[in-house]
Length: 81
Image 1 (cartoon, rainbow, N blue to C red):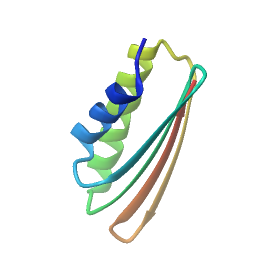
Image 2 (cartoon, rainbow, N blue to C red):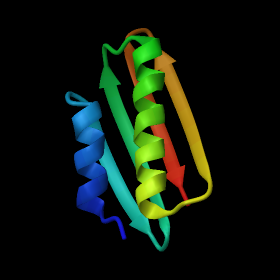
Image 3 (cartoon, one colour):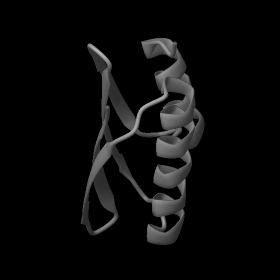
Image 4 (cartoon, one colour):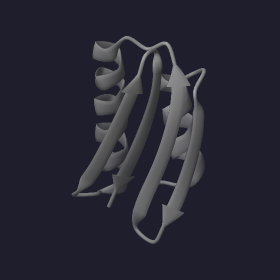
């Protein structure tokens, strides 16, 4: 079973300068990530790596991802369940 610290550690390894919030609700995991200065291609690669890693570790089957980009700032909401 994956815990909140594992999820935070994985997210921080990919998004070093971002603000990260993790919530564990039942079998679901919610992440909110906000940052500045990522290349769009690299951003989506990091999101894919994060989601696939957490999904494998938690055994989750479904994922919702919302990405907002304005200038060099980005916001990501991920729900894995």
